[in-house]
Image (cartoon, rainbow, N blue to C red; front, side):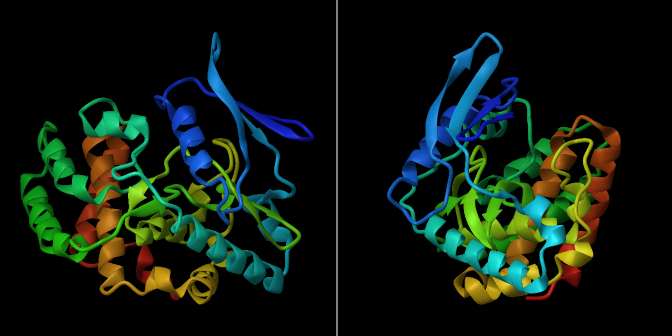
Length: 290
């Protein structure tokens, strides 16, 4: 990525098929809305890979700004984030919108990433895990039953435009408020509360979200008030009946995709452990309050 005074240029290795084309499509849906975002200027494919040019927003990422601002400013940032998300979830979205790379993965091609959650594909991940040599068949039978029991929670859902990867590095802040949401390469049509999956995971496990692979994530103890502030700013996002069970369902989807598709055995083993914890009713949400 190159940052100019007015423009941002990004270059990809192409691992995420048509990610920039998808992002351009989503960002263009935001035109005329109240969603703060960086305007898309151009994108294409070159000899070094896909590229994307957008305007540069004022300010810096929430990840960078957070440690230096006081509690009142942090609350103001999260309140403006709530307003931005409410506006995002009101943008008309094409039915079935999915990133092309995620559609490929769901169709049986390699998985370049393991989120965002797709409710309708959860049982499909159980079947994918059953094709693994040495899989835990009893565990997966329990998971299949667990998912079947909870699918009814999503039966009447309206799908909205969900960012899909919302954490500190994908929110730009300036003068104590959100200047823009960035990186819509994972945006999709899902229930609005699917947005909470990454946000709350970030709050609970911020060290796993460094801004760069060799960087450091934030201290989780500085994020404990975010869920409550976000609830105050956008209460509708938290008003779903059985919200915690729904959030655990999203988490189960993510852990299943890791277990079924991740190339590293230690990552798959850790996901298997977390799946067992979910079946017992526990996960990273246990310590979060809103």
